[in-house]
Image 1: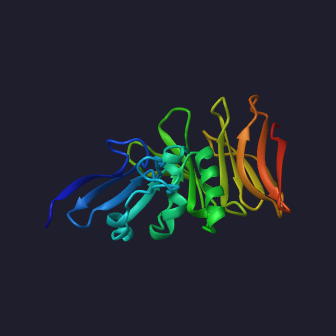
Image 2 (image 1 turned 30 degrees about the horizontal axis):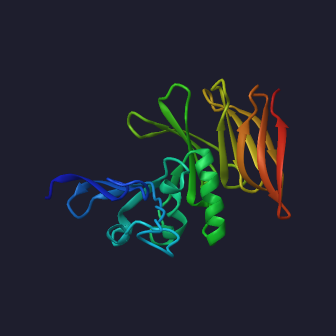
Image 3 (image 1 turned 90 degrees about the vertical axis):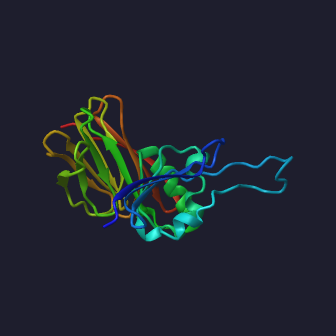
Length: 235
């Protein structure tokens, strides 16, 4: 039996500015499970690459092992970290994990290329830093223990895929906004549902708490128009 080994393979970004793409893997040799951290572009210089718009990392090694990719993690929304994702995702087809703002921009890029919006899972930390909250394609809000990686709790299902996730400033509540117009607010500590609303026919892109924590702002698309809605969620 082959011993497990750890892989760190920069496909871009190491020793250069831009085009960040880092592969990590662990497992028996040639059977490692892999994750990709960031997938960015770099911008050409007129002196060396005239006429070139973007430069993408060479992903041939990872594409050949796409069936072993567990996830793609995007750390933030600068183009040198996310710019190549929409270009190369169809050849990787792995679930993408990102924070709220980054996932929203990533979905807009996916819209331009006709990729599925529900490829993204939005993540956030609980206030004590011991758990990660995640929402995505399966209509559930999930709690994950950071210490052991195990699922601690699952809330839902909601009527539609959850696209938006936000934690209130005081760290007590979490809002989950669904692609089809649903809005749920839960108490983080207990999982108790505090608010429930559904705007049928609205496409929801993002959600955020107002500073006082009593209202939630959601971004929608309806009849090809952008709409920002403020909803009071205080009892």
